[in-house]
Amino acid sequence: MTRVAVVTIAHGRHEHLAAQHRSLARGTIRPDTYLCVAMDDPHIPVDEVDGLVRDVVPVDRGPHGGLPLATARNLGVRTALGTGADVVVLLDVDCLAGAGLVASYANVVTTRPHRIWSGPVTYLPPRPPGGYPADPADLAAWDDPHRARPAPAPGELLESEEPDLFWSLSFAVGPSTWERLGGFCEDYAGYGGEDTDLGRTAIARGIGLGWVGGARAYHQHHPVSSPPVEHLDDILRNGRLFHERWGEWPMTGWLEEFERRGLVRREDGHWVRETPERHSRAQ
Image 1 (cartoon, rainbow, N blue to C red):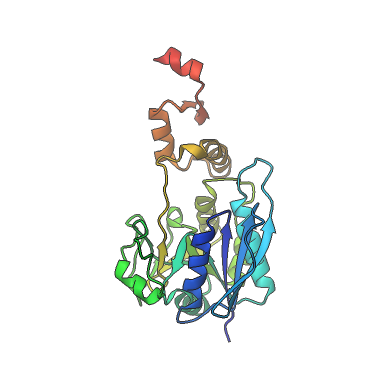
Image 2: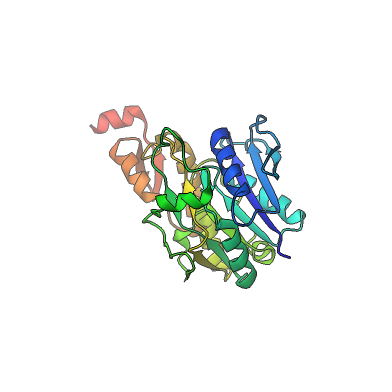
């Protein structure tokens, strides 16, 4: 029998985490293990919904002060594999699981284990007065997958070798492929870069990517900034690390927008934070 673990990482977002818990408890197949890695958040409790227990593993912030997203995901997968999981699903804390998400991931990872599999993600509008549907089967009425990623229909699979399409919002992997991959690079801290790095690492190690239409997830709405100015220092630090590893900068759309706002500049092939004094002189 295939054992499935679902891992999410969280700092805050307790209401979103609780809603995700409910969606997983009411899917067509429940995970055998549901694990939350609490990043510098001692207030996330072990909890139970409809018989599905959510276990919690704590992790502290990294040396740069940013949330240790890569480290937390690796810890979650390592802990899940330690429970004997044959399939590990990583699901962003903001994502509700569609009714067939766990079942679809379990099937594709078991039958085609040599790829990293992702499912389409719909960004939901602001929560209506009555909330999002409590039954995950009813989420299908909201289905509108993000246009920047592949979106095969339920029942369809799409194989891919394009590393920049990898997205950690929702994906699944088997133990042998994860071991071959080596997980996320833990030199990344805070926001940005670690997903694209993992996609590049996968292709470099001969691990393909894939998209499974039945594993649909629904991202609960929350306010965002575009570009994410609050993560500027993380993006610069992680972008430089990515450049050292792969010879190019990621997140160039955001960096170019930061440049238009006078927040960064290009210097010797790199992006650096602009100083107010220098920016004033340039104007």
